[in-house]
Amino acid sequence: MRKFRYILAFMALCLVVGPAVAQEVFKNDELTITKLEANMWVVETFDNTCMYIIEGDKKSMLIDTGTRAAKLDEVVKKITAKPLEVVLTHAHPDHAGNIHFFPEIWLHAADTVLLQKTYKGKVRFMHDGQIFDLGGTKIEVVHGPAHTPGSVMLIDRDNGNCYSGDAVGSGQVWLQLKPSSPMKTYIETCKKLEKLMDNGISKVYCGHYPHVKGALDKSYVTAMRLLAEEIDNGTAQGAEPFPTRIPGLGGDNPMIVRKGQVAIVYDPAFIK
Ligand SMILES: [Zn+2]
Image 1 (spheres, rainbow, N blue to C red):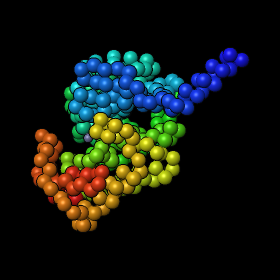
Image 2 (spheres, rainbow, N blue to C red):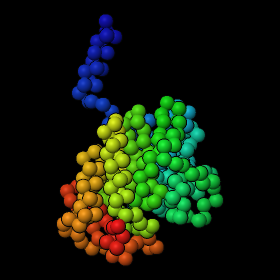
Image 3 (cartoon, rainbow, N blue to C red):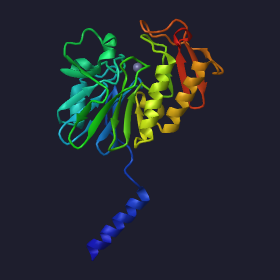
Image 4 (tube, rainbow, N blue to C red):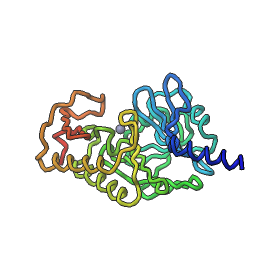
């Protein structure tokens, strides 16, 4: 009977406290790791990019490798000791910065031109529709080009999650970088994700999580698509010059348009 009272008291406490909240589990000068879900962690870098770790029953996945992070392989092992698949959402240096710590990486072939030439490990190419079976958790590759030609979104249907890299954006999406894509390509990528979100995907974990501190929802993706359509058809209001240039990648005269919670950076010379 006493045991039963303890159980009741525990249940009452759970009702008050609610479900487990995000919990910081590791921190050093460069990285902060926070557990977001039962088998998923976000790894934030000092300069606001991020990676995600997903642990299955048999294997784990590291999504992206961040900018600068000493001994990233050893840090990841503190979270999961299972065999690791290292998958890049795209090959920009803030997402592929530490690949040299890993003997093998997965990449969409269309981003090969962006990958650092000094990588000595094995590059394996993944394709739209490919499934990584981690044991109990399956992760599906969905090609989502525009930010880069080989950008992918990684879909965990069982948990309703999409890991989008920079394919959709983290507050703003950069479409000005070379090799650039037509605005229509970005619109198609947004539509693809909206369709997934009509079919069980509810949370989009983006490539610069520190800016948003949570998952994006469908209204965000739709707002991006509507703004892209306005840029494409010439009705977007309030475009301003965008000051940041990325050496070797930037368009000549990038512009930014903001609308509500979203913004798109683009090169007017390469909309079509
Ligand atoms: Zn990027």
